[in-house]
Image (cartoon, rainbow, N blue to C red; front, top):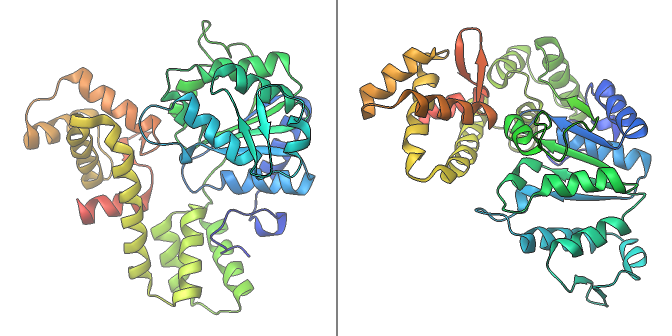
Length: 347
């Protein structure tokens, strides 16, 4: 079902992702590293899970959104890894001979909580696929997880898939263009997710409601397409809400905007006292729809006082890299129309 809110695991439940599935498959068959990028709710996780399920590939799937806020310790990362290993029926067998791992009826436990234990597990996973979802979260650590990925790339028969919705931050973490970085020069395949165009969005909505046996009038579908702008995750949210709650589109859109705002506010907490400046920048851009650098500076200074040029540039770069802003010909705009609506309504 297209409108199932859970990540998809079957090809028939994916809409129009045949090219992306082929790119992911080709990338893993021909190489060792694939990077899947795209903004929030573009379908990255569904794409990866569907490929793994269809090919029946043994894998370890680490969702880095589950890591605690603040600095990522090796201990917290190993907790995430242990939890995933304990969900795999084959893990006890391949880890039974690894020194430093305790295996009991309770489950798999790493006795030592250090990088050497992580490397030992990666060696045991040879022949499998390691997926690190929202991998940019690993930048919040004193440990060089990019070095660990590079080690696995160079020395192990291990396929690696990295995904990230904060695309700029993901590439900051990987530093693939930095000659001093561990992953520099390693070839990899990038699979880029995208928004649906207007025609595709309407087709997705029509087919989704057909699957549910519900008739929704054309003007309602057109309004949903306009409000949710081809973001397949939001279109799915709309469709599921219509089917399960029979709510009017205004109420669905308001709830979606509140969800988007909540996610944004959580992300901005890492900037501490500077959070207020980030919010003012976003308010100005949302109000103007498209805003040039000079307009943003004037608007922010009119509300909270002087802001140094380099500080404003840093804020804009961070917001673009985090996926909240998009740099376009006209200047800057809020990347997600649902988030823009939330900023205008609730800030």
